[in-house]
Image 1 (cartoon, rainbow, N blue to C red):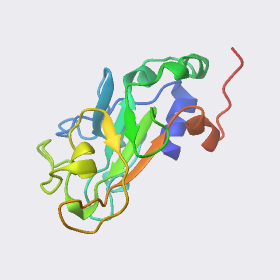
Image 2 (image 1 turned 90 degrees about the vertical axis):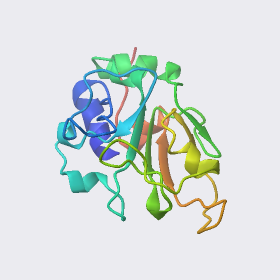
Image 3 (image 1 turned 90 degrees about the horizontal axis):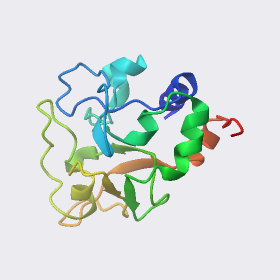
Image 4 (image 1 turned 60 degrees about the horizontal axis):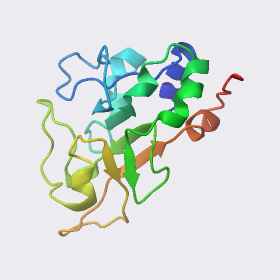
Length: 172
């Protein structure tokens, strides 16, 4: 998240995700809309690919409200932050994050090289975190069975995203 915060501080916006099939080699999409879901754009952020995978060597899912990618200054980003509501998070806070990262763990749901998802996330919160619709869920850890949930979800709204990373919004 700190690298995303640095991107916001430098450029006044968050990056769009890299495509799910990573055909661009970790390059952020040139534009995105609504609840944009894909891979962390590692190359665009100056990160090695190994920095954006979980402990099972599976890529994180990165989702961002596209309006947070369309501003050109920190002041504009901060002024529009109340409108960032394309993403939703059930079972956790904030209800409408501006950015979400999901480590899918061994239970399935992580993006594969072809843009598909690793099998195993068939229902419940795990499936919600792997269906690419901008809705995410947090649930209690369950190691196995039909209600398995081993995802780790980081979700930030604004002002928490700016506050946690020491970004001070300019007065409007």
